[in-house]
Image 1 (spheres, one colour):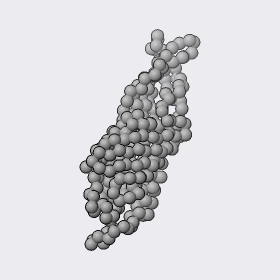
Image 2 (cartoon, rainbow, N blue to C red):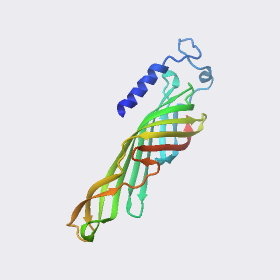
Image 3 (tube, rainbow, N blue to C red):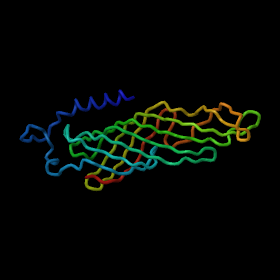
Image 4 (tube, rainbow, N blue to C red):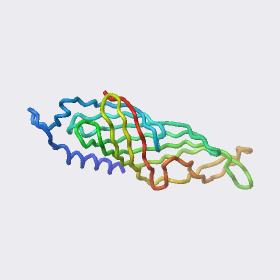
Length: 215
């Protein structure tokens, strides 16, 4: 998947690095609107949606390649609690967006790599001989994400993204559980992974809205 991400970046660089709009005295081609309205390159904000729930992120529009490319990083962490499982989840994603215009705003295509890490504490697990046990495990769900979005300009921005994360995601996990009444007794058990919004065995749906500031 990382090779796919690198190939995407190289293809876009070769395809768009010679894009032309208005010629400057130095021989570079720059959109006149960019000259009249300097780009706010650094953005910081929050996103609400799936699967990130609530995340913070940063993005920087590169001054090279006619301002089309903007690397980004998003991160979130939140508690997980159901009747049978509790613990915590952490979501992180890094990648790059390609803006279709040269002003670092408007419609864009994004490609990223994400990791959804789940540290789960399973309670009341059914063991042999009518026993009840508990156990802890860690789950990593990795995907390559393709997204289409739009971002407004100005000091305060609004964005919306829709996309899909591709990956073979497990639906169950095997670990060692300990008898709640007799800690010396352990048993290997298989349990279902807690349900996560938008996540299936073939990948995950991506959908979020965001708000932040640029400067």
